[in-house]
Image 1: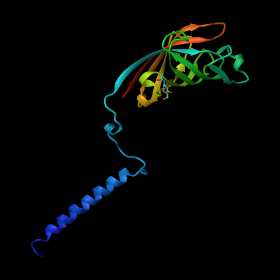
Image 2 (image 1 turned 90 degrees about the vertical axis):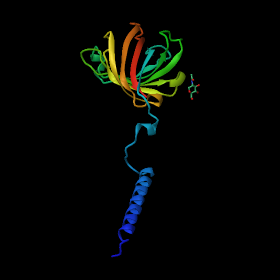
Image 3 (image 1 turned 135 degrees about the vertical axis):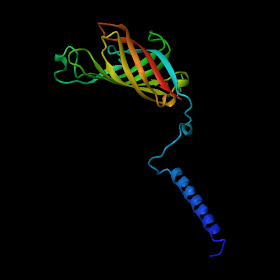
Image 4 (image 1 turned 120 degrees about the vertical axis):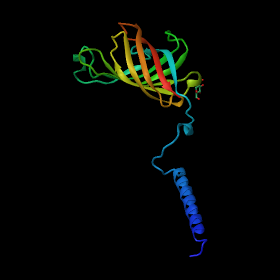
Length: 196
Ligand SMILES: *[C@@H]1O[C@H](CO)[C@@H](O)[C@H](O)[C@H]1NC(C)=O
């Protein structure tokens, strides 16, 4: 072999490597790739921060314009003092201050259901859909256990959307007023979430 033989080989080798890299790049740019690893920067994620939200939740179950309605129950639900088996759908206003007429900051939309036989304990599956300021259009998802007769109930925040993407944290609920006759309640919420 002539002396120059190794040169074209290494050139070919480099050429093939470049082609390979190029095709790998093309493959990851294709939309039909099932999964790939991204750097958080690619999603514009910078520093994780901790936010505190404070608002009042209005659960109106009676009168002409209820915001929470019974959608299902079992034949034996009313045999339980705790209403075990009752399922309610809520679209409850969230306001800045305890007064219903104070500024609306969002709605709590979702289901709460009596999930305990011996004490009043609700399963809460709710989205807080925010409507105020920079959080307008963003939401937080809550999934937890609400023993409504306890002074403070803590429930996990399991996720969020918009400005609350990747959110996780907890909510603390404290009954502000409960009308024993109408069962309407105002509940103070403190929510602590990590998000970007
Ligand atoms: C929130 O966003 C909606 C839809 O973009 C808009 O119609 C509404 O006026 C906004 N509300 C506030 C309080 O900014």
